[in-house]
Length: 426
Image 1 (cartoon, one colour):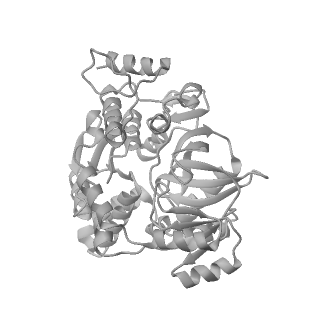
Image 2 (cartoon, one colour):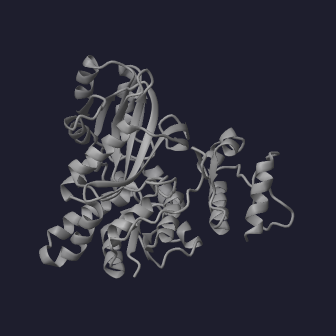
Image 3 (cartoon, helix red, strand yellow):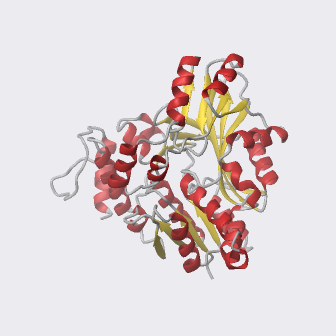
């Protein structure tokens, strides 16, 4: 009997659809609690989908757990992780009535004592330092006076981060105190109501409404700047043991503090050891991401934060010990690991659609492995149409016989190949 995984998603983030496909391929039955019209529904991978409501998030997830009775829950984004943790706190207070939900959350994510650390960057790095892991110096900031006290001791550039932010939205690199104060006020301020309302109306994402209405301010910390380049790890773990891992250096990004669009697979013992130490110390289970800075002068790896959720590269099978869904399936079932065929020998991974949206003529589209799910043409088309709604340029050439909108003219052969392959699979 196939074990059931319930993926919790509060956004229509494309990479979680790829993860669902990989989990299905590994042997899981996939259920999901997600927004209406989620791109996952283009694939036919999910056995059942349950509607997620931003105005009743905990009840949405609780009802999905009760109906699905999953073997494991995987949060698919930062907000869903926060909701799952909050649901655990609510249900543990109900005693025996909440035992079913609490048990599956503990089984899925690990020790409940670790839950707050996914959102408290300062405390996490303190624990990492206790484990002998390199970390940048980090301080907790509550107000402008404390910021100024920190600034009198700090060296610039430095990094300000708001807890609970994602996708680079809550990060600013500052070069002096004037920039620091300006960034502090911006990052700490509650979301503008106009922005929250626009996201709710256009994207169906109501996650900013309550913080905006309640004028909720973010918690910030200041971090010393490590000169070098970014790296990231994603691991599958079970009861404090890392089962499989992927380690990458970041080659290209949407913007200086945004998510990666191109990565290079690397072997980095220091990053691997840091992930193993944190997973063991916190007794974690599931899919976890770690972000690092690789110091330019020495190559030393500095842990900068942990993402207690699945990340955008967790679906990639890249060889022995590098297939996260297969490792997780084996841990849950007790069966031997059956890894999927390695998807590419190319160590440069060009993520679809971020890099194409960023630059249709990017050299990485040709030189790297462009991770397009050709086997799901409806999903690819939905992704491209979604991109069109967000910008004036999209990236498939329009042919006269295609009844689908297509992108600005790109005279590269790859664009023609893309249009031909999508049409041939329709």
